[in-house]
Amino acid sequence: MPRAFITGITGQDGQHLAEFLHAKGYEVFGLVKGQNNPRMVQMRDEFPYVEPVPGDLADLPSLVKALEFAQPDEVYNLGAISFVAVSFNQAELTANITGLGVLRMLEAIRMVGGAKNNPIRLYQASSSEMFGKVRETPQTELTPFHPRSPYGCAKVFGHDIVVNYRESYDLFACSGILFNHEGPRRGLEFVTRKVTNSVARIKLGLQQEIVLGNLDSKRDWGYAGDYVKAMWLMLQQDQPDDYVVATGQTNSIEDLVALAFAEVGIENWRDYVRQDPKFFRPAEVDLLIGDSSKARIQLGWKPEVDFASLIKMMVAHDLRFEGDKIR
Image 1: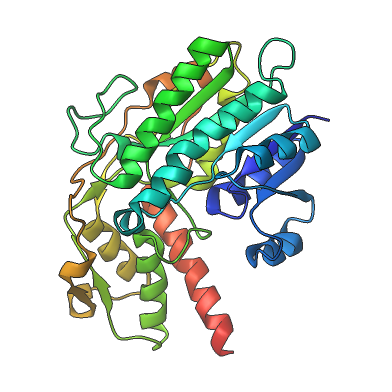
Image 2 (image 1 turned 30 degrees about the vertical axis):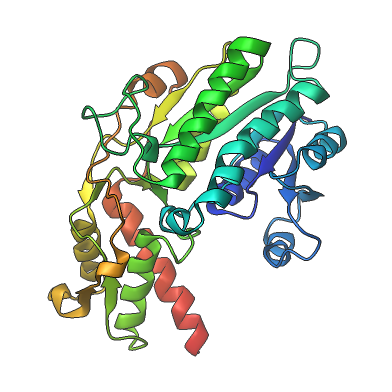
């Protein structure tokens, strides 16, 4: 039975990946910070097959112990301070976890045995936010990085250190440059889930408006359940490499809002939306759209859920989620 070790196990991607790997017959271990992590209560109920392992991306010895315990064939490093807006207020913490955490994981793999004698394979969650102020459209694996947030800067370091360790120590280490991927498991602080949840609450009479920032920003949005398949496929290849994972289509936040309201039968959505400067980023990323040709050709991967279906799925979930609270 193959063994997988996941950091960020309680997040959206960690949950999807654990589910996916378990269905493929993996024994799944998840890194958990703190003995009383409240999210683990939910994890134990919904994902009883995940074995929690204590550790912290800020602490190298704990990562070494975690890998020695789990003895994984594959490590998926999804853990990060992942909310871009927070990274501006907690820049040092973001750099430490999202950036240096990757270095610590690479060191732990190298120390436990990640080269030819015991080839632990690493997947690193890189991000389209690394492109930031884009130099070309669409973005590929060769597009230069110009990050526009502490989060993006930290992800660039993580991405580059993976390349360095791969070339220096012969580690099987890959990075997936994933563009925005969403779903019902996305946290409420992220704009897609904030919109779909707020629309559901407005439809149910639980709130009156949505307060947002820039409605003109455009993103390449896909479904998280599709994207974890690409993570796994990267680690099944003969040679490690880096891949852009994206739909190749872009939509604005305004498109997202209009589509979500249309799902609940509200056409005059502007009556329910207010913009507030506090939700604007200090440095905005205006347009992201990925070219995933390499992943499609070499991995045989392609997205299955389109943008409209994704938003429909999320709105339907949030109508049930909020409706259950008032029944």
